[in-house]
Length: 158
Image 1 (tube, rainbow, N blue to C red):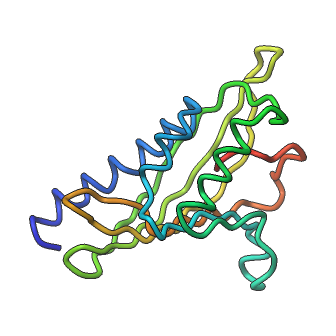
Image 2: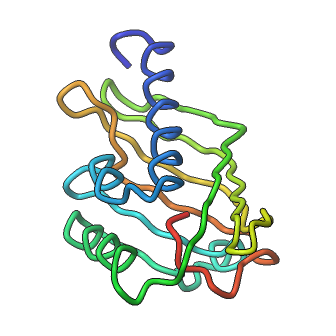
């Protein structure tokens, strides 16, 4: 990675944290801007990932991502309440000057209408990132959700 690994890693970490913040604040349109035009966002359970099974969802390309955002902001959406994403164990691997992969763990908490905060989901992100016009973006973000904690009303961005 040109421009110094420390600087690139700091920028990638900032992107990952910004993604979590935007989802927690339900700023879904801004979240779209974190992906490349050909960006992919998907979620799969740990078990299905091990067995090349079915995805919970998979959106390829900006138009598909826009449809997910439209769904999330739509009239028929499930009430979400407040969410809080935490990220840890971030590992970034440079590939080429303007590409990298990253892995991290996530834990999501949700505060319901009753005002009680509860554990919602956890798992791992697998990211493929590219730098375009000086800015790091997700080309691919895959959330691998631990099976035993998948909520029945699971419609959120992870």
